[in-house]
Length: 327
Image (cartoon, rainbow, N blue to C red; front, top):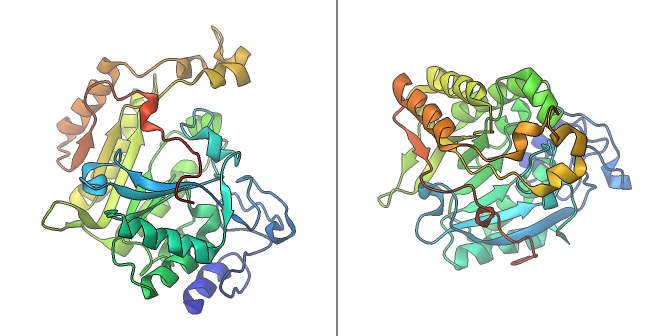
């Protein structure tokens, strides 16, 4: 376990023993260089402590992830993107969650397995990757046998992904943008397309083609999510084309239409959401016609391995209460 932790930590310029946070921190592409061990906060708004907002069975992931029993989702607080339209904004800005040790995190994984979870689903774990690796390896020595899902934004260092071999079984990753201007506008990350391409390449190289058990549950592989944003059909098509032409059936695509225009966006950016403002398109839902045109484009390309959403899925009920359950 220590060797695995040291290998990941070395990428940020420091050797690490179990439980040690690298400082200055360069774990993600932001490379903030802040002293998290001394309490400094980088872009992710996190110090060396692990904050978890919820750990519970979750039924709203892709069918091969949630199944009938639910995915054992662990929602971490903080994020290295904090998109202006974020659906989990309460925890992305580090405003919710309880501090836990790596030892307690390992216990949480085992408790979720005991409850019947199909897998352990790590939601936005990038900025806690050292502690997460420690907790997963500890849990595995104590009986964790279900798959581990790394549920991230796609904005991860390729080198970090490479070192997760033997820790992560499934990458459930976003691919938000192929448009650099859009990624800068919405996520303050103009390098997102470049970073996401490299990270995805490493994910597929590490895990290969997807595999499933007899119940249709994914045991190993990569799922690439794309949340369609209102008015951004071309960006969605560009993402789909890149992923399919590069990886074909080695990955599954998940095309999502559940974008929710929260009122808080208008409160935070009143001028930019007003008529003529550059965020005004984010203040409405995705139309049925927009989504269907993107799905049709995927079918026209020949995409076969894909999940699509039907009906009125643009509802806040997809977002759980971040009330500390299971923590």
